[in-house]
Length: 381
Image (cartoon, rainbow, N blue to C red):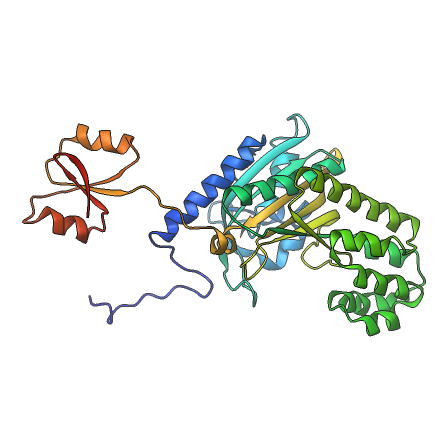
């Protein structure tokens, strides 16, 4: 059947990943995992699908609108295909690994599927890789996650990495201490998301001046600290802010060249977080490379502190420098397997001829090999 007669189409937001891109992605994920492992994180591998009620329990509650659902023909119960691996790791930590010593350090990598993409992220299936640090309430845990993520990106050769810190608890703590009418809360939250200063002042009541000052303070971390030093925050809000400062200072001490910015009123995308959060950006990236932050892991023994980060591998690959993978060596037909194995052990990808051909050189080029095995060894084409 000719190509014009048969053109299979994939659903919107799904795609095939072909050579050499598939190998490029696999190599990048492996290198991320090696950096995570070097920092004490152990790999877990959750299933692609789970029962809906477990997938959407705990921190997974916010993911309800994003998951595909289907009927399990075995149990006759509704299954959900994961839209985020973090929520599964939370379940594993609260159940299968509940008795493991804390703090618990785990890492993961795998595919997720979402009902629909967004304008900035049209893909519906994509790769995630990340880490979770569970059972540590200290700000040092938040700092460690940021530092490890930055180190992993550096190991991949990503340049111009920037961490944008946020604090989703800051605005609610200010609003709870002010006389803001309940009817104003939702439109005020929208105005804060869009940095609409006039609307913030109009809706913010007693908190209007403080909130507009927070918007103005957003920017590079050192500048944000200076600007916020002159703002009188309610006691709880001040405590939250000082928590962010402690995390940022710990990160700066460990990674002084890492760029830190602050968006003091950012909340979008951090539905289940309860402390310092962050988004990851890099020079040349069209969108964020990942995000993370502090959340609470709920289980039978109560809430457990946790913090983590997820990298969006598909976005990340756009700023990872290309690497030369294993060279392809063509071994003519009837080359002894011992010879093939010997060159494989030296790091070559060996393509063995399966039949006698008229011209081994032409065959090697046809199979996209960079070298051909001659009597004296590999010969570059």
